[in-house]
Length: 536
Image 1: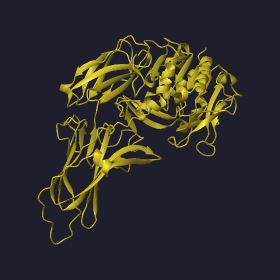
Image 2: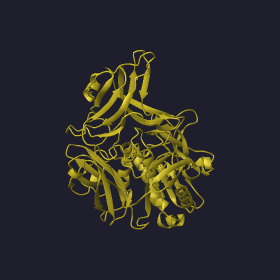
Image 3: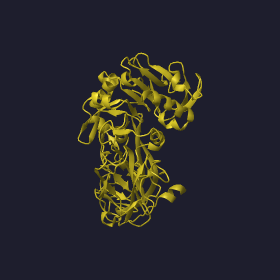
Image 4: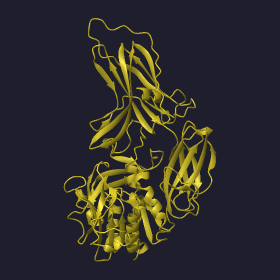
C-alpha cells in the first residue's frame, strides 16, 4: 500500500450513529444521499454523481469528495476503478486504489486526491458496504445486459481538453474549444511539413509560429472558444497545442485539405473515422469511454469529441507518427479525411485528379459511399497503397456528426480483400510479433536497393494482421509473410497486385507496418513502391 499512499489520500468524517430497527433482521446497510463534488466550484456538466478534478496542486479542484449517509454501522470499501477497452468481448477495469473503513451510522465523507500522474479520463469510485454478518451491497456502474446503470460516483480527470473540427481549407476560420481551469494558456500550431524548431514529444510535429498567450480566468468553470484563421498552409496534418503554465497540456488534430481536389497528383487519406472509434473519451460521464471498444452498450460515437489521451489519437505515436514524417519527404501532397472522401460525388473525379491514393493508417471504418468510391477508383485504373492492416473492415453510417457501426463488409457479401488484396484474419494486442520473411520473386523491383533477398527477415509485425482470401484479385503476390503468426493458418502477408485496367495496389498487411519505415530496408522498399505507383 506504500505506493498507493503516495498517489492517493482519504479524508474521513463520522457522525452520530442511528439506532437499528428492533424485532426483525436489519437489511444490508445503505448509502443514502450519495453524491460527489470537487471541494471547489463545479465544472460545466458536473452533477450529483459526476465531478471534475484537475490535480495540479493549486488547491482548486484537486480532490474528489464523496458524501453519504450510512443508515447502519458497516464497513465501507472504496475501490477507484479505471475502465479500459474491451478485450476478447470482456469489459476490463484496473483497480488503482482499495481502502476499507469502519463507520457508525450517520453522515460521512471520503476524499480521493489523485496524483498528477493519473491519466486523463473518468474513474468509477466503487463503494462496497459490508455489515457485521458479511453481507454486501455494492454501488458501481458496470454495464449490465448491454446498458450502463450509474449508481456510483464518477470522477473526471481534466487537464487541458481541446477539440477542433477535423477539416479546413486555407482561409477558413477554425473554432478551437478548450476546457481547463488554468488561468493562463499558450496556444500554438504544429505541422509535419512547415514546422521549425524542436519536435513535440507526443506528436513529433513542430511549431509553425511562436505561441499566443491567452488569459483564461473567465473560463475556469466551463469551456471557452478561440477562433484561428487557417493561413496559406500546405495541405497536411496539423495539431493545435495548448499548454498551461503548470505543465498541463492538450492537443487536437486537424487536416488542412487542398482548396480544390487534384492540386497535387497524390492524395493521402487519414483514418479519422477509425481514430474516433478508438477514442475512449467519456463525454456522458458514466465512467466508461464512449466507444464500442470500451463499453458494449455503445453503438455510436461522436466524431467531434476531443481525444482522451491528451488530445492525440489512440497510439498515434506508436503507429502513425513515423509514416507522417516519411510522407513529409515525398513533397507536396493532398491530405484528405474520411469525410472529404464522403463528399466526393464520383470516383471518376478521383481518377481524373489523382494517380495514387495512400491510406497510411488503420482505415477500418468506412461508409458505403467511401467503400464504393475506393473500389470504383481502383476499377478505373487508380493506384492504392494501404500501409496498415484491417482496412475497409466495418461499414458505418452517419447521422450528422455521429457515426454508427453497422456490420462487417464481408458480411454484406463485399470482402475487403477484393480491393485491398488481403483482409483481416487475427489480432492479439501485440502479444506475438515476428519479422516478415521476404519473397522477392513476385515483384523483384520492390526490393531493389533494400539489401533483402528471398528468405531474409525484416521488421517486427503484429497487433492486427491480414492475409489473402479467395476474394483476393487474381495475380496477388506475397512480398513478405510471417507464417502462422497468430496460430495455424493465421499468417501476416504483405502483398501487391495489378489489374487489367492498370491499377496497382500495395498492402502492408500488419497494423504496425508503417511504423517500421524508420528501418532503412523498409524505407527503401516503400520508396520503390511509391515510385512505381505514383506514375500514371
